[in-house]
Image (tube, rainbow over all chains, first blue to last red; front, side):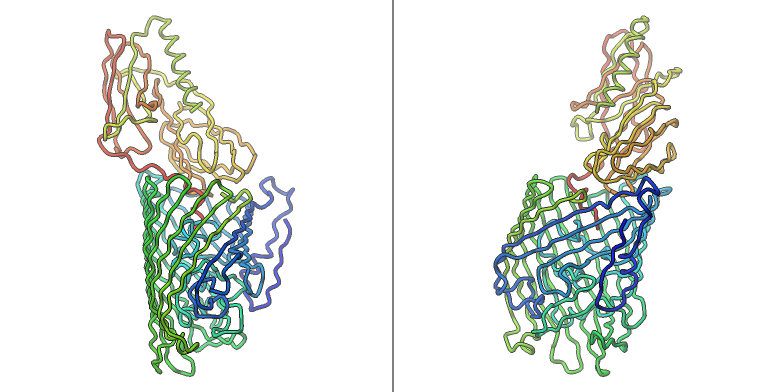
Length: 421
Length: 217
């Protein structure tokens, strides 16, 4: 196994880097060493959008592709690697190119070591260390943290993909009731992380959006300096204080999943990192979700999120309470799937000067049709309409604060490799 | 399915020997219905002589393969002393485990590598899982009953047995009844004795199809 190195040009993220330089024993030392299992996906889009300048380009639009980006686009090119390190350890890397002007043309979204000891007496323990997604979304269940239902994620999960990543450790203890004659499983999960002190910056400046553009570990949100939003750096440790999350999960067979989680990055608002011109943003939230599936192909998902982010520039007090929810219904008939989702989201702005900067109120409708003729090909057509009102547009751009944005995408995705299923 | 046929074939051979010895008298036909009255395919039936000392069926060598991230078949019924081989026909690795008291074991199945068969000596239910793919679930039922088999698509199964009184017991991986569901059946002079069993409670939901690639998060 070769040693993989990565030239990061920003802040110290020792844990993630350590994972990238793992060197496995020589191949002949044990018969379980094999080449990594892999997957390559290429997702190409035909886009039509009337959206405002996208947040990807520093704008205040809520769509990934704005009106200047209609046409042929790269949705995502992805390489995933999974390598067993002995019987109970494994290493997973997920790298993507998004076809925009992010710092690195190819960058990681996840990189972690996982410990999976065999279950014992009905219990199972799992440990992850590295950079990965916390178990919150009930929508992003497919490889690469993608949604099998729509191209664009809900407002809640778009935000999680943009601003949050666990860079630390997570432990999960499962009680496997379905293996012991019961109808349900239960799990407790807890995470301890650093390098997520700026989380909350995006929601307090642009607000919620709906897209599938996940922030990469060494990348940033917004890739242009033309503004009005400056590129936002998210995965940094500023105050030296770890954050945490704790959650529970219940499953009724494979039909119903319920998740609840509390997250707090425990940031110190007095801490400031001059290299990225950002203070630490104390952000905490609660999240609850339910997914139910039937044998006849119906799926229903509801998720709810309620939290607050906070900043204290120049000893002034700025608070942005935020909440979002969505409901999705999906029906699968053979290899065709039709999904409809309604999103509602609000960011309040409670600042000393009261200009409403960062406030946002909106809702969105998403409808998607997915056709999977085999395990390698996937064709998706998605229509998305976001209606939102954000005073920041009037403050920053001098335009109306209200906007309705529409985006239609035709996506063709091709997947290759033993993990692509 | 092939293994089930083998097992049924072995039972039929045993029955043929008994018939030749003049001890055999009748065919027992068992039909099983779910609680809604529909025929229940794949139900496991065991038949024991009441008060008798019937010997377990002879041990077999069975196979449970891994295909498309699922156990194939997902249920084996075997007698004590039987062995089961777990090949891996997938291009990905599997790690099979059981923490059931009747047989605890762990077996990493790396791609293309075969492992020696696992021997099941103790009577009982063994639940199998894969430590990598959570949705994989299978069962091995080890029984010392002299006669056993599974119902066909019409919910029916038959066996030739000597005259006597028998306890017929039904089990299905998705049935909610905890206690053995069975009935005592006297087999007298008639050539054919029919028994109908019906579950009292609805079955547990069947595993959803096409979800196994979605358990990444």
